[in-house]
Length: 296
Image 1 (cartoon, rainbow, N blue to C red):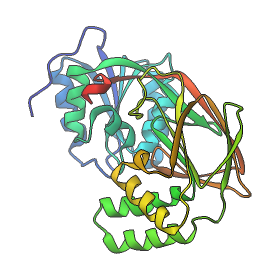
Image 2 (tube, one colour; image 1 turned 120 degrees about the horizontal axis):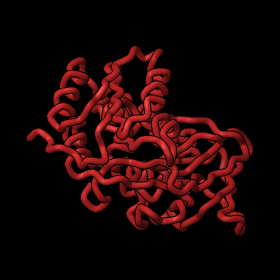
Image 3 (cartoon, rainbow, N blue to C red; image 1 turned 90 degrees about the vertical axis):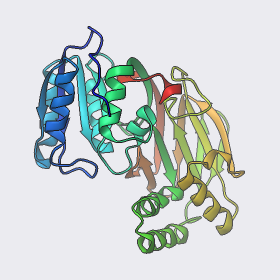
């Protein structure tokens, strides 16, 4: 891997946050990152706090007003960094340091963090991202609502090659399928029913440009256990949109409701939502330093 060339003059001061306890980060990461940023001609301050101090360190980094905030941690920390930076704060470069790394992979491809940092510094351009918001929580890649969200732990176990655990979690997810269908309305339109709803941000959508003014919304309605298994497999392979049980359209605001609390996955992290919840598109919510979408 070659050292990055100096970044454009618009970036000089960098704050970097490294979580050594995160799944994809080793003890040598802070020193390696310091060498890379120094080679790029950047004035960088790197923090590697204990997990309990992670959020306070992140706030200090944003409050310092850098040109660029580099985060090497999990998906939850990347989302928190995006919320703190907002549309007027520093550029953000979220590197793959967690388990699923949904945002970094959408930005830089499925690569290791040093290569993602090199891509950000050498090919990156400021990109204003539209995101989704549900119950005050931002998601920058995707939100899955409903029982198929329960497949996420099974998929993660499979990625780690823990096949027995993956099978156990898959059986658990299947046993809870069809126990509480969702009702939904997109952009105040007619009501629909689905086993699950998937909302994709423009960043991750293969059907939308980065600056598209809407989310890609998909209602998922498998007719039985066999289709649910197929959908789970397609979701694990990243081909869920091709599944015949999926119906897709664009929307700026959605309401989803059920008879009880709704299981969800927001950018790879499990969540429990209220029985009635609204999903809203927020344009230009955060500025990211990353290559153009087609090259990621």
